[in-house]
Length: 186
Image 1 (cartoon, helix red, strand yellow):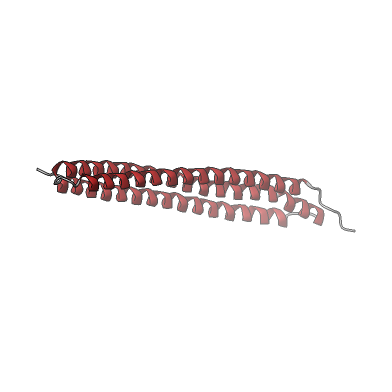
Image 2 (cartoon, rainbow, N blue to C red):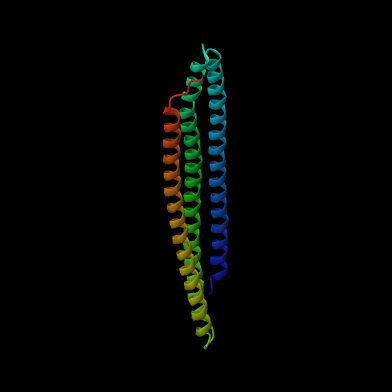
């Protein structure tokens, strides 16, 4: 007796469960991103009020310029920290979803191989060429998926290295700008 319909039904159920997992991961990521945005907005408002108060209490123009310049570095660092947080959330979400999809893809691959093996056993004589072609196509699809997956990981690694380098350069640039003494007006 061929159990192909049962195996396909189980595969469909696994697909639905996988999609629910991906949806849950996406919602968790959206929640973390919303919390980060809310906390960042709250901190920016509080910092802005503190900075405005400090600027209004400056005794002379030189103190005002010095105070204003001293606020650049912490602001830039907070901006970089925010973008790092966004990047971490996106990376974690992408990694979690990728794991879920890879797991499902492996299960689907095993199911398809089992279905093809079972079909080969009960197929009429001479149909082994068609089954071999289907298995070959499945192997080619797996190979293509692996190649694309490896390339995507390399792109992510390169992007992460570039982001880290750009972040370091931005912090150094802001730090050197903030460290320069203010010019006195004549």
